[in-house]
Image (cartoon, rainbow, N blue to C red; front, side, top):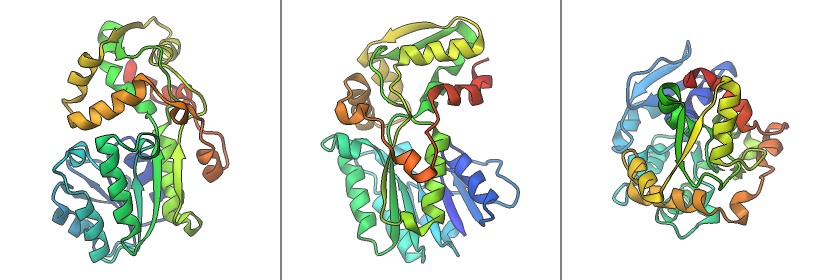
Length: 279
């Protein structure tokens, strides 16, 4: 049985579906009630309390670990989840980490994530780490303003990064969970091209067949919006990257294609699958 945390999110939902379609027994873990694929067990748990994960781990052979926003806070203890998995007899953990662990190792949230990676490597369990860059699905934050006002508001309109489709993250994570050849692997995941927020807005407008205006936020305005859902340290680390990406963050990684045997999905591919959210 494979346990998927964050199972209702942009990565966890397609990962749960892929594992179920592969014939695996799956336990989907989320903080709130959720619809899950037929045959999938669902357990509600708050990962800020590691003991809450114990019922989901009963009989589990593998765990996909995705940290909720509050587990990036300075006083959080995500390593307790690794210890809980090891104590529960889990044999393999696939951790959703961050590209910034390698590209911005001094950022406060990256230091904490690096420490969590190190804890996993020293746990005695098999492991793999996926390090995505920016998510294409972050554009869903614009959905309401596009629907109601035809407007996108974002910082750094002309600073681009190669955003990755969460479906590709899920597919790589599934491969790591199911194929022992990926044990001990660290995979940096990006999309196939650099794309700016302004260009993302244009891609959505093209798919809608109607204009979308772009309004550029200041960094302070963007941080104020982000800190409603994530700790300030994570917001600052993220804004540092999207505001002035370095060479490593602009690089198109070969890892999606190396694992999946195909080119990564583009932002346009993601928009085509999710255009209903913007109508």
